[in-house]
Amino acid sequence: MTKGKVDALLGIVFGDEGKGKVVDFFTPRYDAVARYAGGPNAGHTILFEGKKFVLRSIPSGIFCENTQNFIGNGCVIAPDLFMKEARELEAAGYDPAKRIHISMRAHLILPTHRVLDLAYEAAKGKNKVGTTGKGIGPTYSDKAARIGLRVGDILENFTEKYAALKARHEQILRDLNYTNYDLAETEREWFEGVEYMKRCHLCNTETELNRLLAEGKNILAEGAQGSLLDIDHGTYPFVSSSSTTIGGVCTGLGVAPRDIGRVFGIFKAYSTRVGAGPFPVELFDTVGDEIRRIGHEYGAVTGRNRRCGWLDLVALNYAITINGVSDLVLMKNDVLDTFDTIKVCTAYTKDGVTTTDMPYDTAGWQPIYEELPGWKTPLTDIRQEEYFPERFKNYINYIETHTNTPIHIVSVGPDREATILR
Ligand code: GDP
Ligand code: IMO
Ligand code: MG
Image (cartoon, rainbow, N blue to C red; front, side, top):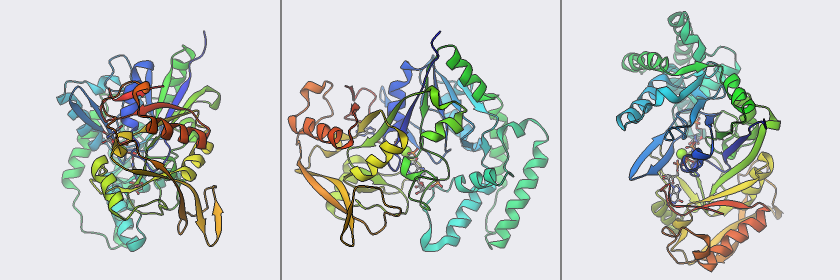
């Protein structure tokens, strides 16, 4: 029997590229969908048959009857938020607990991790990262410091282990003079969530996933965040705390590099970023406001305004290289339907130096743009490539030429149906 493959779908910019939509669209082709990094800082939106869901920790393969869903060891999980999310799906007629396998090695986000997240941000003042406040940084810090609690811990002597880590966090919070918080209600829900999680299949997900591969089954690894938010390769320190890039698929799921198949790199026809940090293509004018308004660029988790700008080929090519992207997935093209001119950043310049390589620190670099004519035609109802306006076809070709990578999917609306395979 031929061994199965792990394909990956990764956000290759600053997140919110439309990963949820495309994972949901791809799911019928796969036997399993697996999240390998991040936690409830993610917000993955899925729309079909007039229904809308925003998934945070639960993989976007959950709506397909025959697909198994995995939360891998590279993820962090908040039991209370997980339970809330699962109950929303139950209310809509799904039974998520039945089809979710959670790694016993995934780390738990404690209520005090979330307080620490807020406390560290407050202490940073104007240098704050603009985190989602979900406790991501403190949880991954405890993991690296080898003091974290894992899902497997909930099965034995858990209250003692919980109390010890909580006490440690409370000491740090006292040291930071951050004592104005009340955890009673949150803790009640959190422990209810711990019990709820036990209804899922808690296991060594790496064993299960490798068994599926040996049986010739195929797996889709669902990215969270984006390559420029990767702890190593992103715009540090304005990043998240996990490995969002391709290496994270291997470490976060326990699958071998030789089992990786296609790598889908997903991005929008323009750029956005939520939170602080350098963003060379950011627009501060009415064009940026228009992109935000038309594209509904407000955070799915925190409701914050997303910062908007034109497409950035420097960032894109960097992410394609470090991830080994085999196929591109181009999203939200309809958002640019009404613009006369579309700009694309082809290089950065600073102090008389021009580069197409990603600088160590992108702060202070200015974008150099090329201009393309807008297509000025509504794309949302088009379902076949041959009906695309010529100028939109030119935009697609332009990106393929300048990235040397084929665009496999073009999305023209939020609905599952508004997806064109090429
Ligand atoms: P994710 O985090 O990568 O899954 O992306 P988000 O769900 O945070 O953000 C993507 C947003 O764009 C969601 O509101 C989607 O419903 C929406 N969306 C996805 N694809 C398209 C598209 O092609 N056109 C438009 N207009 N919206 C889209
Ligand atoms: P999805 O999966 C966009 C950003 C935050 C902040 C930084 C660190 O929906 O694409 P964290 O809470 O992770 O410590 O925040 O990362 N961020 C995201 N931005 N989409 C996301 O997820 C994000 N997850 C985190 O805004 O700047
Ligand atoms: Mg999102």
